[in-house]
Length: 94
Image (cartoon, rainbow, N blue to C red; front, side, top):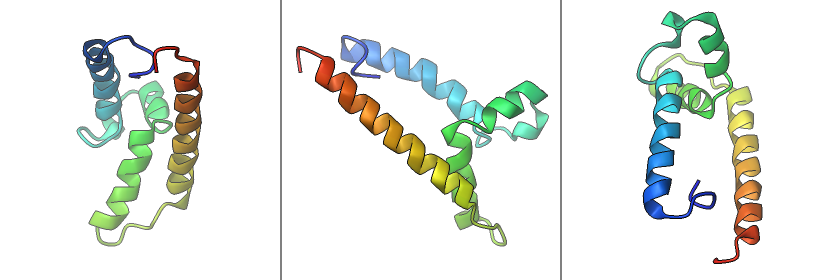
């Protein structure tokens, strides 16, 4: 996000706008079972939902480790890393 906006203040605002919906839809703050079906479907594709599933297997006894979530998180991290690298290479002031 910092690569795409001009100043640190702008990055802070944009990150807040992005972070809080991702946090609330991840299932960490509220269970997603109470959300409408379209929001539940969206929440399952968000990285925060997958990370919370990975952490649940470490915190909650009897939870099965979710290899699909680990694969998903690794793929998203790789995509974000290469996207950030590409965006940084395009900036002229860096």
